[in-house]
Length: 417
Image (cartoon, rainbow, N blue to C red; front, side):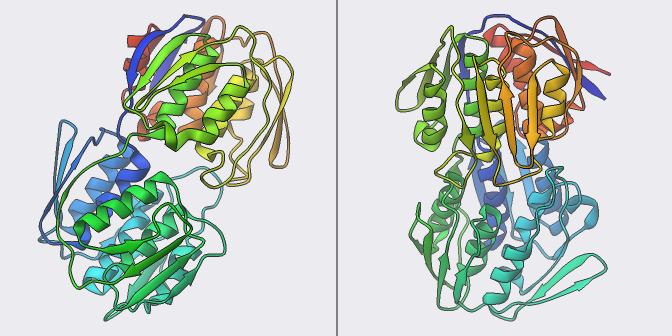
């Protein structure tokens, strides 16, 4: 078991480059299954979730080569239509193979997903979309079995916005007969990136960046190359790293437009941001102001940056209220922040953060991906030594985060526990 050891209160400086977006890459990897032949994805980082998806796709029959930041996926010889429990139980994003396998081969067997500690994330909307397109779905021994001789376009009206369900609905409908309308579709940049990829493959989709998508089914898709978008959540995490340590750093290879609601909240703390086309410079403030946030679907404040913002609010001069509406159980980091002598209380899905002058280093434990990044941020600003265990969580979504922080001047090392 590996740990991070952080000696805090070191000023950071310099530049950091943002890696490709895991949450955009995973559905695009699955979308490669829709076409026979070799697709090439550029700007693909080495992350545990990406490695696990690649392993699952190899079991399905795809040939995958990941060299440097380039991934080649050849889906020509895919012939196994099952996503086994051993893999799906470890990573929820495995559900993304549901639609492409069903659309291309007419059948799929996928274990109910797991791999996430943030409460329950039901797949009801995914299955609803497949049924609307004509799939027959049965459940057997913990597996979802979906069959359809040919999917047919239909109207899909989601009861709530869901990135995963929107992605699966898109991947199923591009090869369906006729027109599909998706209402209340997610409009996150990761969905936009998937739409760009599918269109490049030959799909006919309109309505990108809106909540109403219209898909005209085609008979065949083709493998293509594509550059993966940068990770807006990693960019936001490093912006907070600059703000929380009161350091001047520059975040490069990012897309500021993907972070507008987040950047507005950061500026309300008193931190100044110099925003350019593909970079953001953090100009810190001596006095961090308290700011309330409420997580909501894009383009409003992202749930994946809720925990990190809470770490920043631990140093604000006053009280801030943080409300989580996407995943109400996404507060497991609070008990660990309080171990560092933060002053945070919870009332259902609302957290009250009373700022303190400083946090004090201690032994803490990561409970999920974003919580682990939050503890790193808190440790960077705390006095003394902070030891973070179970850091395998952070390797799911941040590529070599300790090396990037070291280059900025942080005193952080990875050690065997």
